[in-house]
Length: 370
Image (cartoon, rainbow, N blue to C red; front, side, top):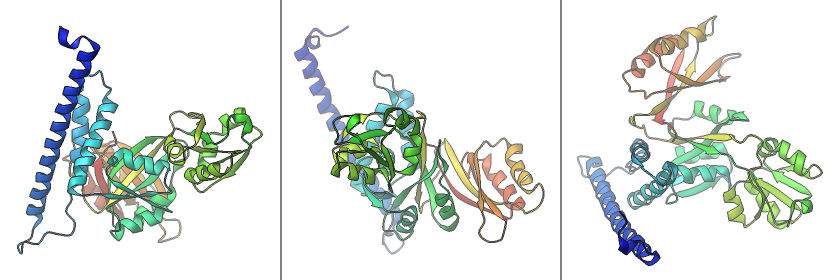
C-alpha cells in the first residue's frame, strides 16, 4: 500500500531526496572499504624487507565480472539489467580510482569507437590515452607507459584485424579481458540538412558498412576515406559541406549535429576488443581462453591437434590461421575456447595439446564479455 505521505508529488520528491542521501552515504562507505582493500593488498605484497613492489594489481577483472553478473541476476526492475550494470560499472571504476588511477591505451584519436569501448569496460574514472596505431598500444603496455591496452581484434561484418593477431604472436603480454561494442554509425555535420552535404568522410570500413544507406540517401556525395572516424569528424567541423560517419561520442566531442542515426547497413554490427596487460586473471566462473597453436606440417595435423578439444567436450568459439613467419607455408592458429586454463575440464586438454602440437602458448584466460 502506498503511504499517503508519499502519494503527492511533493511527498514523492522528498522520498527520492531521502533515498539519494542514503545512496550517497552508502557509496562513500563502499569507497572507504575500497581504500581498506588497497591497504591490505599493499601489505600482503610487501617482501621480507618491507618494500612494496612497483606494480600491485588493484584491478581484478574476474572480481568485477562476478559483481556485475550478480547484479543482473538479482535485479528485479523496473530498471533494466544493462542500466543497473552500467551504474555499478561506474561505481566500481570510481572506487578503483581511489586505489589506483588506471591509464588505458586505445586506438586514437579521441572520439573513436576504441575510446568508447575503453570507457564501456573500465568506466569513466580511468585515464584513456590515445595512440596512433595498434603496434603503439602493444609497445606502450610492454614498456609500462600505461597499465593496460585495448585493441580491436574482429568485427562481425568486416572480419578479423590481422595486425592485432600478428602482434599477439610477438608480445609477452596476456589477454586480460574482452569487450563487445555495438557499432552504431551516425551521420554528423555542421550542415543544416542532407541536401547540403557534398562529401562524406569516414574510415574505409565505416564507408563500406554504410554503403546501402549512402547509395539511397546521398548517392551524389563524394566518399572520402580518412584514417579514423574521429579524423573525419574533425574535417566536418571545418567544412559545412562535409558530413562524417562516426559514433555518438565523436559527435559530442566535436559538437557536431546528427543528421541521421544508425545508418549502418547491418544492425547487429559489433566489434570485439581485447584488453592486454601483464597479469594472469584468475577464474571468474564464465571465462574464455585464447590459444596460439602451431600444428604439425603433415596431413591431418590440424585435425589431430583439435581432437582433444572435441573428445573432452570443450567448446571452440573461434579459429583463425596466420602465416607463422618462421618458415615458408607454415601457419599458426588462433583458437578461442570456453573455460579457464586452470579448469578441471580444460587444464588436462591443454596438456594433451602440448604433446600433439608443435608449439602451444596460452595467450590468456579472462572473463567473457557481458
